[in-house]
Length: 306
Image (tube, rainbow, N blue to C red):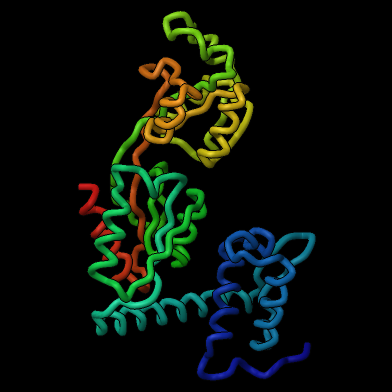
């Protein structure tokens, strides 16, 4: 086998980039599985892995129709790369602690509609941050729960705010507030004009219902197991479109429903029976490189919601 020149010393930014891609591929279990995490196509990932192999002069993995597996050299490189990343993290921690001034982007990822949830008081946090740390640029992004978890784990986001359905290793969760999800019915739906006392539970359970597209807590799972699930929609806006069409029922927090309720476009169905609580949490990565930024935003949000 042709052996390319050994990895240059010291290791540069490009080599570190290739090693990070390699680590992600290994942790995802293959090139195809790493596409969404890396936001790269499989062919691009393959080129990066090939470039790394050429720079190392090693064969790191076998990839093809039979799947993905590391070679012995790949296993050793994977462990060495983990040690390198830990050393880089430690260096970042030590140097970062010497500089009290925070600069650059402060990145917050929020689950659907949570940025404007009144208990979160995010506008107050933003105003406080702009006053106390004007040199920081706040970056806000809406994402799904798995996307938020992965962004915080990979340090593409400093802090996430999301419904707390599970615990992921490497993440630290801080309770924020709880809200109730209610079953809503559109004006075009056959049940809309009937009072709750006229509607049997069996009629509600027989209606097509939208699954929220995420894992739920036990209370939510218990209710949805009884429902006739005929569609799936994560974002409230797309879920609302299905309910407004009169073809489906769907669960929402009352804060989101208020404009529709006021206009008579939607109504709640038996709100004392068809409802379940959702606990929202703030999430950070344990031992993040830019932990000072995460701690700053975490402290402000927790103060506003306490």
